[in-house]
Image (cartoon, rainbow, N blue to C red; front, side):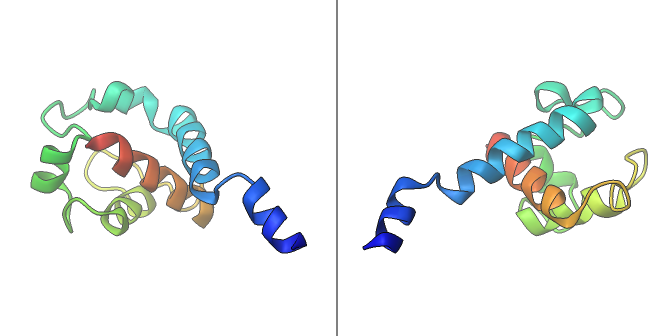
Length: 99
């Protein structure tokens, strides 16, 4: 019963991850990607249609994580600046905001 109460009473993990993802995005990505736009390469927004067209691997969380980690073209790599959990959280946040 105690475990059930802990699970029922706790916040869902996904909500906490998306909250952290938003924080990571605001602190590291929003300078170029505010509002899902791209201030450097304007055609490469972080919206679903553009991610499907331009993102290596297509519109999915793993492809977003790869791009965040390794960078590409004018986008810097964040793999040495952000930890794996933050990269996963921001990728989930971008994925959910892009649609």
